Length: 79
Image 1 (cartoon, rainbow, N blue to C red):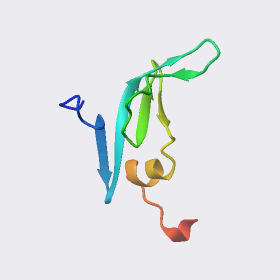
Image 2 (cartoon, rainbow, N blue to C red):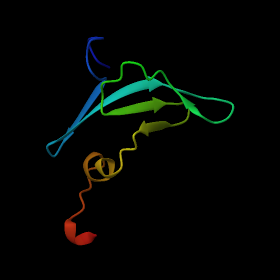
Image 3 (cartoon, one colour):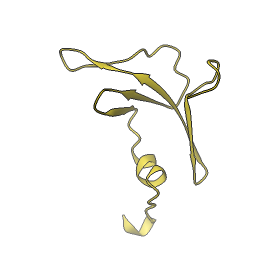
Image 4 (cartoon, one colour):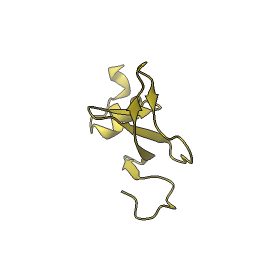
């Protein structure tokens, strides 16, 4: 958790020279299944929408999650 409410994000992920700022928000699903969270004043690169049973990243982490966060890096020859 960030120490100051004035911080631009809650978490910073830094791996292999790549930085990603993450804002963590408590989230809910509407009866129609739509994801809802307070999106006001988000200055981070990604929102981690926390639900009771999962975390949804918006926008999806995509390649950053695979190559940087998991610790597995893919060489260009493996494509």
